[in-house]
Image 1 (spheres, helix red, strand yellow):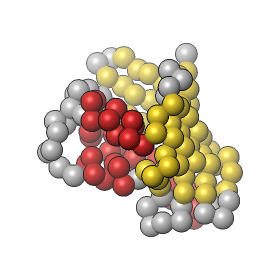
Image 2 (cartoon, helix red, strand yellow):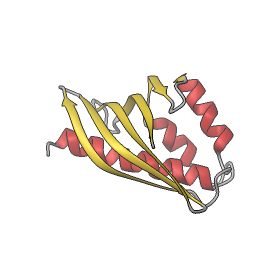
Image 3 (cartoon, one colour):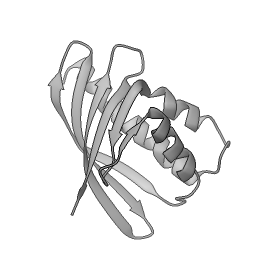
Amino acid sequence: MTALAQEARHSVVVLHQLIERIFNQPTGEDDSFHLLLSHFHPDFRMVTPQGRVLDLNQTEELFRQLQGKREGMRIATSEHAVISLQKDEVTIQYRELQMMNGSDQSRISLAILDCSTSIPRWRYLHETLVA
């Protein structure tokens, strides 16, 4: 696995750890929210499992609404597969499993990460629910 591919895989894991922490804790307990936002490119776009297209501001608002609202949720990622490597950009597919109160929800996601900075920044994310 190349260094860029390793950076992308690590970024997937770290970002989802931050999301899990935000879902589980009330506003302002630590700097998790600021750290989460530092992982997104200013031109970030996301397609939600429901088909909504969100820009960075809308994504930030979504996370602010969900902060502290999913106590007990755990998130795990697996099946990380690099689809494409460019000079400073990685396209990676992975499976995400959200577990809460005995209910599991799985999705397959495709992300494009800009790896030209010290922290890879997410440019695009497309999530699809798995039945």
